[in-house]
Image 1 (cartoon, rainbow, N blue to C red):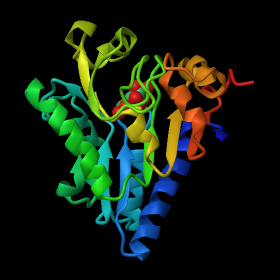
Image 2: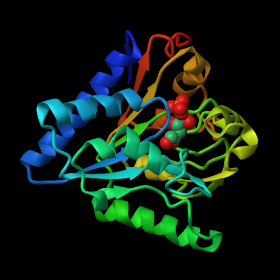
Image 3: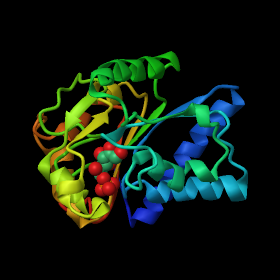
Image 4: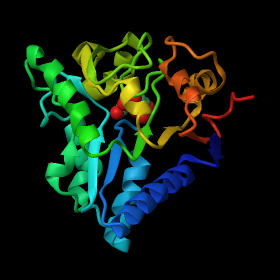
Length: 247
Ligand code: F6R
């Protein structure tokens, strides 16, 4: 299903509330909430609202375990552009999550250790019983996570090569496209699909064409987000601008 909100603020609050409800429902049962998280501009308002709920309403993250979708490769965790830095600044530094419950792909590994790391990432998610909820943004190439065009529907966590458009879109953060890493470690489409619930968020006019393809286009590896049409557990949460080309 597709839900369209007046603006990204209202949409972000809705998503944050759903995450909070999941966390609280799990707390009541004495269980952990296993969350798949995304970085980038899109989820910033969701994380800000979760931080507000923690500070003003006492929402606790003690029972929360997180797995981030992706990380650039190579990437040092303390670099300004790393997804570790992003998550710490936007969310983790401001809430009471246990640091050992945070998982983000490791951009520092030698290349011959990456495959083992990726297999282990999958095993860790499975050991927790799988993801309760996966949050996604969408790239203008149609990527989810960093599953660029050509990604297989059953792909697992792996090292991938970033699309040129993706690197161009990231160039501002890195002060030029030539500084953007050419690779990333990402959960696969198959990894994402195993989540019990998936929320894909998109805001602004610049996402309208890719949202039209993702929601209404032919299902194809050329636009990996179209795979989401195959799942009943997926909800697209859009602002009016991102939804403006839908029929
Ligand atoms: C980030 C990720 C990417 C982004 C996508 C959109 O962890 O996996 O798929 O969600 O590139 O990025 P923004 O939100 O910056 O437009």
